[in-house]
Length: 130
Image 1 (spheres, one colour):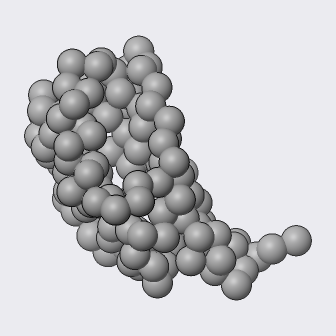
Image 2 (cartoon, helix red, strand yellow):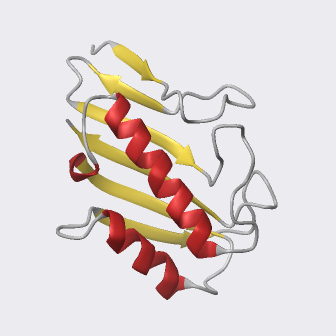
């Protein structure tokens, strides 16, 4: 059985409950990134009401998390995107293309009724291979 190593970037807010931003498997080959929302290091939701701003903050949080594990955004192979509405589907993808310009990760987008905080419009989790 593989050993698990928690990855906790200093630029992500402290968790509200039982949560680790990411788990790497020994010897750090796979990284499982928890669902990230648009929170700044203080835990404040960024871009309330704005899908693009929230997507940008989440991508920055993804970047910080994968870099804390020794990788780059290029190492992200798969993302699952949860949205409370499809109001700015195009905008979400425009922002994501800024962070994944060449070969984007495999992606699933799911509309949900709500997220953990009503200010959050989008949440993204990811799997990376380091």
